[in-house]
Image 1 (cartoon, rainbow, N blue to C red):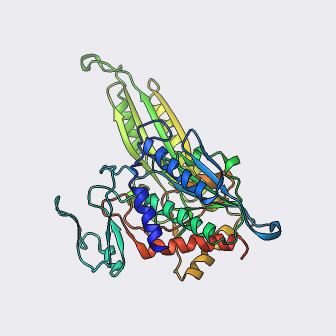
Image 2: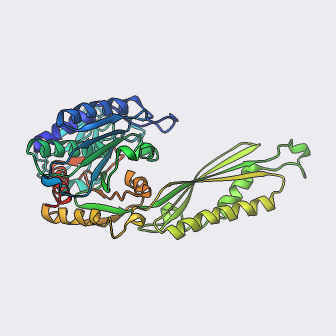
Image 3: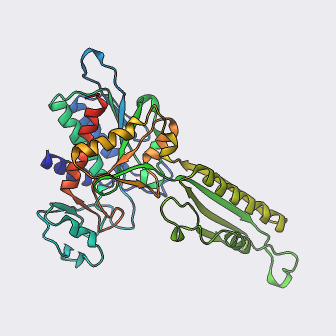
Length: 412
C-alpha cells in the first residue's frame, strides 16, 4: 500500500498540468485533459461506471455500492483538482525521494546549487526519520493536488480489490482550481449526485477545514477626460487620481497584511491606468457572511461618492461572488460529513488540527450548490513553493483517512 501510493504520485506528477490564468478557457491547459484521460482509464480498470469526461475536462464516475440487502446509506463523493499552480517556476516537476531524512539542509539541485535550508524552512526537521519527496528546486512539487489524486485512486484500488463494504461512491476530478475554482464551477451535478463530499487538498498532518472565506472580486472601471496640460483647467478629469482617491477611502487596517484568523479584508491588488482610463481590481474576503456583504456595500458606497465628486467621469463597479464559506452550508442533516472526519482522525490516531482557512477549496463552491464538502489533509507542506515537500508517513495517514471514511459512510 505504501509503495503503491508513492508510485501513483510519481506517475501523476510526471504529467505537466500547470493551469494558466490567462488562457480564458476551461481547461486552461491540455495537460489537465491528458491527466483526466489517464485517470478515466484507471477508473474503468477498477470497475467504475458512468465514466465521463466533459468538454471542460471534468471527470466524473461512479463506483456502485456493494452492501447487502440494498442497505440505505448516504451517497458520498470525493473531489480532487487536476492542475498545479503557476508559481513562476518551471511547469515540469522532477521529484526526488529522500529515504530516512537525517535532518539538516537538503541539496535539491547540485548542478544549480539550490538548497532547502533549515534556517529558512525549520518545519522540515519535524520529519527527521521519514521518507520524504522533494523538488529539484526548479518547480513546485505538485502535491497540491496530485498527492490527493494518488490518495483517492489508491484507496479505491484497495476497496475494490479487497471487496470492502461501501455505498455508492462518486468521484470528480476537476481542472483549474488554482485559478478560481473554475473546474468545480463546471461540474454537472446530475453526474455527481451525492449527499455530501470531501476534498483532499493542502495542509499538514491532521488539518481539517470546514470553514473558509466567502470570496468575491470587484472591478472599478474609470473613464476620465483627456486634455493637453496647456488647456486642462476645467477640462481634464484624471482617472488615475480618481483611482487613488478610491484606494485612500479604504481602511488600511483591513488589508491582508493587517489581518489574521477569521478577520476579513478588502485587498486592492492592482491599478492599471493611463491618461484616459483606469481599472482597479479588488479581492473581498470574510468568513462572516454579513461582514462580507457589508464589505461589498462599502465598495458600492465609495463608488457612488466618487461619482458625485467627479460628475464628468464615467465610473462603473462590477462585483462577482466567487465561492462561499463551507460552514454556511452545514445543517443537522449533513453534519455527519464533518463528524465522520473527526471519527476517522481518532481511528487513525491523528490529532485533529481544525483550520478556519484564509482561502477556499473546490468544496467552497460545491457547498454553495447544496453539497456540503469539507476538506482534510494530504500531509504535504509548503505549497506553491520550490520548498514544497511530502512526508510519506503523513500521506499514508491521509490514505487511512479515506479508507476510514469509506467504512464510516457505509454504516460500518
